[in-house]
Length: 294
Image 1 (spheres, one colour):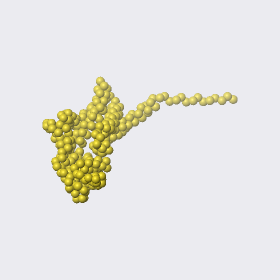
Image 2 (cartoon, rainbow, N blue to C red):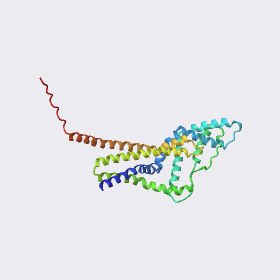
Image 3 (cartoon, rainbow, N blue to C red):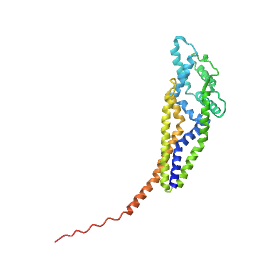
Image 4 (cartoon, helix red, strand yellow):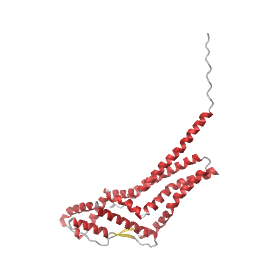
């Protein structure tokens, strides 16, 4: 019974490793506004993200102004000016403010009870951009309309299902890693051969971490495949990589730690068995002397 119960606890602990890692990442990394904004801040300097923003903003500006036969030249000039703006401190400040506003709006909606769409007002960003382009004497920049431009971050019909999942993740983000640790310790303490139990637990947790790393790669491929045609896959890939950076680092640390512990507990046991086997073997009989006849 001790062997069976120990094996069951260890298996459950190893199964909870990828689930606990994913839920803890969602709760403490994605679910925290400060960490989310800090994680997204370096993305503003990514070349693909800057290129995507320049294309999107340029298209928006050109739909609001009429320049006649010089449209191509003006478009190229506006695009270069917008791309230059994405490298300034003002843009990075606006980027952080937009991400913070969007994240706080989503969290309020997920933790509340109202079933209405989550939107973010981009007027402050648009005003900063217009001021910068006007100062740089970009053609038609002073005609850019500055209004309360709201973008929908989350549809109302999506809130109900997401709210339930979010509550589960908030609960599991703390308790699943705690449960995995408690089950692993219990399984090792109940084991008849604890050294082997430690080895099995370490290998199981390493396997769980490897599965989580594989799931992260598959999730990236699926997320980029389902994007609308007008969304830059390269820019979305930069955002995905930034958001999952902590998760991937933790996954590789658990994998390396599991393999190290498994090797450290298996090698002494392996050498001890070899020494015991060598000691149990009887010594080889001495060869009889060869007699030479005269």
